[in-house]
Amino acid sequence: SYVLTQAPSVSVAPGKTASLACAGDQIGGKTVNWYQQKPGQAPLLVIYYDSDRPSEIPERFSGSNSGNTATLTINGVEAGDEADYYCQIWDRTTDLVVFGGGTKLTVL
Amino acid sequence: QVQLVQSGAEVKKPGASVRVSCKVSGDTLTKISLHWVRQAPGKGPEWLGSYDPEDGKTTDTQKFQGRVTLTEDTSTNTAYMGLSSLRSDDTAIYYCATASLGAVAYYGMDVWGQGTTVSVS
Image 1 (cartoon, rainbow over the protein chains, first blue to last red):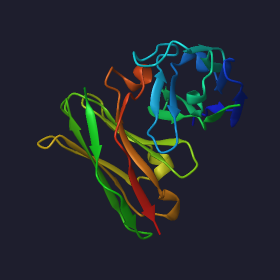
Image 2: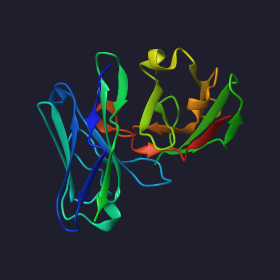
Image 3: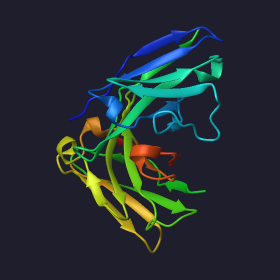
């Protein structure tokens, strides 16, 4: 089955840029969605179709996808961005939805 | 705007079965795709399966060894997820979610239920 690999944790100072990677075999040929999850809450979609943002998500959130890595970038990180972030794809081969293991973003 | 409201918490013994409901409002079950995702304590989301009005039902049969059953009651606009032969590692929050903008592959799951805690002990 298809595997998405994310770093367990990333730390960044407020105001700086956070780059969260999601690695998968030729993931650039798939479309990647990203979710933010804060404690006690359901996941929140922050990026879909590799780089599109739902209307309620700040422009500080952006996404890219190429080769074997998809990346969620958060510019001007704020304390409220501290959360777990998960990437997700649909595997056409198996018709299954796959989530990455998640990255915990800590704002220093 | 689609809204999803799930049934309340469940406590089950190992070997038992559980059924979680997800009531849809703001649209009809015959028009949306509905996904089921669970999250064990301290773990990431894990997809169980989905119902799509055009493509039918898909479940991760290999991972869950055929223990997942998805059903729908269109008269009440409610979807159900059943999980049988429960084990302690099935303890998790179970969510229903929908991709209201289009196919989940491209648009992700943008509307989520509040979650149902299932404890197996």
